[in-house]
Length: 344
Ligand SMILES: [Zn+2]
Image 1 (tube, rainbow, N blue to C red):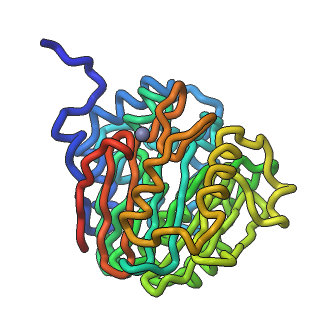
Image 2 (image 1 turned 90 degrees about the vertical axis):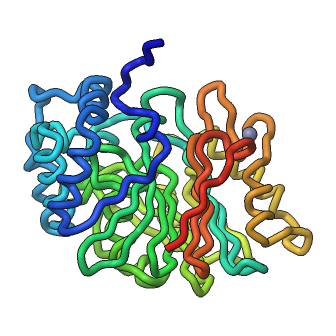
């Protein structure tokens, strides 16, 4: 029987891609491993050589703040045999105007298993789902990190590094456009290779402006320090949780950031209301890893934390134990996925 050719093999679907060396090497390896997949994505997203922009529009700002990622983008182009413009098109696709994904992040700062973070990525079936893959990246001289990333880009939407710093983002549209900023998720990638603590993460994210599309992020370190970080073009805010729980659902929570955002997500509001209800009485909550997982199995009307369409489906979940250096990956719907364990 002939499978539909979407540029990836079954083994590719199952494995965690491992990349190491200089950023150029990392890019080259990723390009070589994923050349067919990248070509499929370019064709499906309609990334064209004729588009009215030049790589320099994006790479000039990136080279000021994160030159390593410029090297990696060059490496991906070399390894995949695609042009620099094509790889820039994938790396900055969200900033060029594609519909984002919806996601939920929840942290328990302390509990019987130490701090725990759950983060799901909910996508429309098809192209959005096949664009995201887990990878383990080990840059020479920097902490290794396991992350979920868009294939053909140096970006990262969530992950944890070997220091136990865990971070996950949910998308948040900006009002402004800042041509001096880096692309969506590129500062998150830098956090994963440079930071050990939540405080260092906040400081690094403050130093790097982003171009357009932004985040509601949640970060936790091995000591259980938690922060919600709202960041869009031209504004960033940090909120420390009142109790043991923090969550993000594509809705800004920092008052100073709200005027800089646009397009309130109905789905995000629904998940925010559900989480408020689930976390209403912390004295009744189970703060263990199993308790976190059970929370992510919650279905509901109009939306659950485990989403089953009609549009958005929970596609990949990272369930992270920062003080133990462990990550469990759920592929597909969280409620019926067998977890795949990874330990640093
Ligand atoms: Zn489910």
